[in-house]
Length: 95
Image (cartoon, rainbow, N blue to C red; front, side):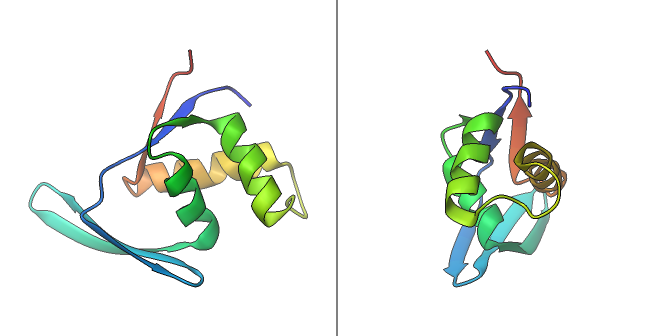
């Protein structure tokens, strides 16, 4: 896994629930409400100040265990890519 940095974007409001979070995001004149899983909520919390992909993988493995199929690197990358598509994180080059 490359050591890219993941940074959470600003949200308007967030309601944490047992199995994740409900998030209100705005983009221009458009607002959306998104429901994310507990793992996604954890990733968003971890990346508020920016953190590396490898650090996210270590923390998610510790909290949720290793994936039953595939590697943690692949699982983290897929989750980060989906959150980026939804506008919840930015992926920046590592240093």
